[in-house]
Image (cartoon, rainbow over all chains, first blue to last red; front, side, top):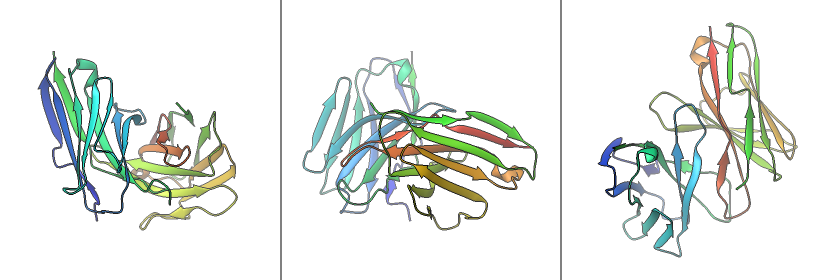
Length: 113
Length: 115
């Protein structure tokens, strides 16, 4: 049972424009969410996270929005750059209990120069 | 950020042999490490949770006797693929969590090819 879902397997965006990647989850007990970026043949790298007590977290060009009532989070990248082309995974976990991270299936972002 | 290192990054072996992959947390202690497998164009599949000083916890459908996990110290976990078959060819990734709440830091991954 996929508790974290990314319904868009791919996304293409023009350089300089905004990239919006979406993620939905089913378990309302999740209280910590993360976004990872992955290049082929490499391990994922951490991008940004958000606690359930917040609805927005910003780090440079990356902003994550959390809508708890809709069980939805999104990652905004602005402006998008060709180097942002990668697969992006969202993940959910419990902040203070357990170790399990639940990953979405990933969205492949292509930023067109 | 914290660093998790995996070795080797690529390994090719003959069918029937065993291969060991190491995962090290370089600047923090990790009582728990995770082993994932990624199939082409698929998400990360959690194989097992490696616990320092105790037995690993395997996910449903993962063969314990085929994928041996040893977490001998707070900075090292190993995954041994025993009697490898071509269908074991995959990209294996380890990770460790630093603190609560904390990010999951991933190793570079290991590409296993079984001939």
